[in-house]
Image (tube, rainbow, N blue to C red; front, side, top):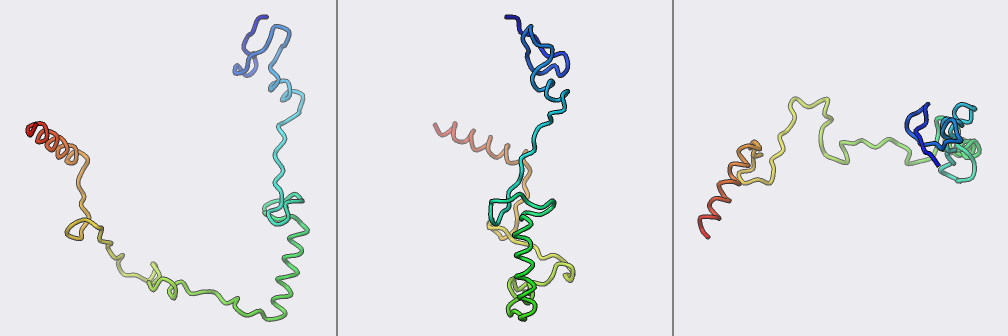
Amino acid sequence: MKISICPRCELNYITASERYCKVCTRDMKGYGVQEEVEMCSMCNENPVLPGRDVCLFCHKEMEEQNAAGVEAGSEGSEPVDPRAITGMEDVSSMDEIPEIASDMPGGEMDMTSLESMREEEDMDDDEDEEEI
């Protein structure tokens, strides 16, 4: 049994009795790859609506609940102010961005280059070898 590469895609192998690989044959006949149908995240029973993550039934149900909540004047639906949670100003209103001190000695960030770190490690290694 002689095996050769598919002349169309040049990726898959075919036997001497085949003209094209199975992938190319399916593609030429119009049998495209079936896309996996995404199921509803709420009920996991029905396919989702295009551009959403819920099915038509769950979407209608959610709309009915939202409409009932608006009519009843549901409490607690007020937006939360982020400044109340974090205690910080909004970034767009800040004059300058505060610097964050690291846990390094001296309270400042140590901005050493990789080259200087390698040199320090080499010096430490040399000192360790001299001690032995």
